[in-house]
Length: 125
Image (cartoon, rainbow, N blue to C red; front, top):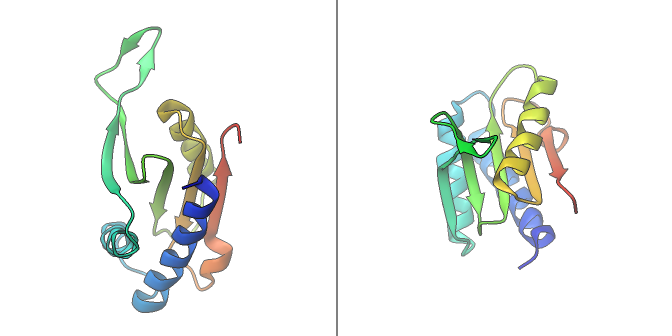
């Protein structure tokens, strides 16, 4: 399945979670609900995936964690914040590069307009 089809389904799952739970909860709650929705759709999901950072040929002990990885293709970065910082977008871009993935979805659930709070981020597509 292509990244585009996966991202379409992710967007639908995000709307379902948001419409069911509403804004203002912890990121971990949205993560668990989104994992549930995507697994119900039949997707293979990994969450809190450790990705090492390679610096000049050496893997550093400090890496980062992908919130949700769908079909080993699409990264989902979940936020539940009052204000989206430009840094979150840049972090997601860095995650895509470090994990060698083509597509990421950055979503902020703490909003009154979920459709305006979903960003699709491409890496060399």
